[in-house]
Image (tube, rainbow, N blue to C red; front, side):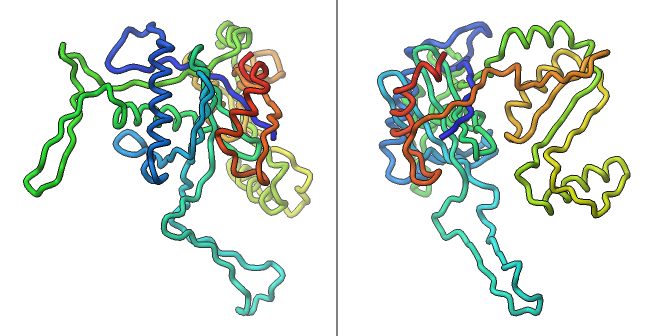
Length: 334
């Protein structure tokens, strides 16, 4: 199965505040990851792994996890936004006379519609790799950081906890987020996108020459009707109309915008490229040059065929994916 692999460096894994240039201690990271996996293995229901609460604007579950020495594989389940909706379908060949058969897919109580996200962690080197199957649109890295922080905040043992009984008999557990010296013990877990130094330096040197932002969307796998809808919307932006001409050969939508960007804004576009769906790209055009420099050339990523055994394309067990990665580890981490 083919995966898009993107590399990040884990730049925060501790409790409290530290200097901005403080590096992550591999032993502390290993301890957190080991505890995270033990927490997941110790739960009896996936519902117990729900990542939720203030500061977590999404619903994420831990599907499963595995480890081999200091290598870890974590699989999350990103809950789909349509989880409460019923999905209906009719056959396009039925007559439009009200006698059509209607098929309905409704999610039963306890079912969690969504899609998986996979992560390989090299704890010794504090490196994180997102493993996105080609048919999945997003890699879920932000959700991974949140999941580890949630675990550190609610299930790890470093923070002192105080149990008390409320007037109605409810048992409440308070977290003591202040250490013995008065320092804050708020957990921090974060990772930073790794960039290709040569391409990044080019952008830094020439950012004042950038005159256009290019945004493309691949529509080659869309149906003709879907293509017409997308292209029509693009035409409406410029006040034009789309006739009934055949657009079945259209492969992408491309938009160019004149801009003047700061260096921070350029770096944000590179970060945004990592967050958008897999069928979108951002690029830059420089003054006096019609060539496009694509933002994804600044990101440390690769496409790799990982020989993992699955039934169709799902599910992929964390244990099986980790075993497949270990057989070809050098291709992933180099």
